[in-house]
Image (tube, rainbow, N blue to C red; front, side, top):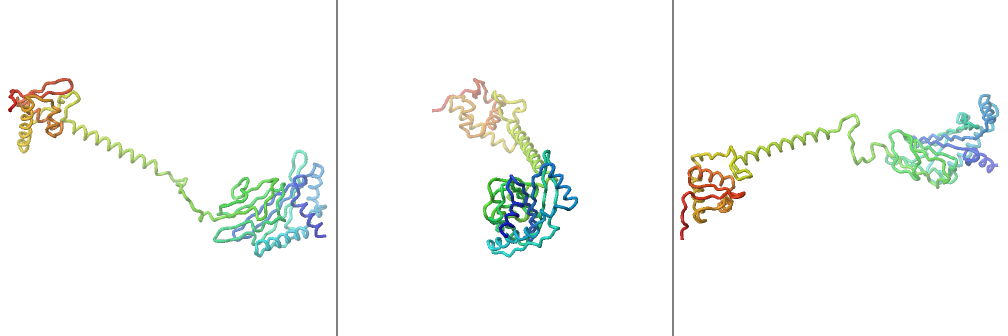
Length: 335
């Protein structure tokens, strides 16, 4: 008798694709309980669909599907097996007629008669360190057939951390395993659900309603760079104001200026040094050689030579791209 009952229930609830289609939805509660809804879709022809709808409306001939006691026995058998496998106490609420409902889904060539069974499975999942672990209640006796889709609905505020095997698709907080010709193994599907607040976040994104600060930062950096460039250009122009241009000539603003009183002695020393170098060099030398010999900057030598030229002490003769500095009064080199 028990074997015939179990065979009847399994035929009704987990039949293969040729006979029926099933959808099992397990809505997980944050306290470890789960609301199971087992939906059986029985394929009917058009005449059978009409009879099915008439039976639902009249309430007659539905008793053949109203197998509460047998279904309750089967689920209790699952519970005992799950307890032995998981070493945890479990309980299923008492079955009654309110646990079963009927519906219809029509297609072009017929449709499905739908039977739904709903019940609470207490202590279905394990709560540990705010995580919810699901899987140790699934046994070989509950292997889902190739005609059955499984849906596990996560509690609000939870996210899946691990899923074995991986679900086929997701709809919000519903994880869906579609009908497959591969059955689940014992203890599958195995899930770990964690509160969203406890998930380690490696990258923090700016809220969608708040603009990112990066555009403003980039603009500020660009302005600073632009100002720096302007200051460099001004500084270099001022620095080169008294330096010879590319042709070796003094620019319009490079007219020799009298040295300040406190620098006269210094400039006189430079002039004497240049004059001695010219005498040593036979009365003339390239301006670049004077710079190398003196160790002074090009701009300072240019100013000193301009002053000496103004005083009539030297001449500047252009030769190619360089200047030759020549003493006005040729002095024979000393032995």
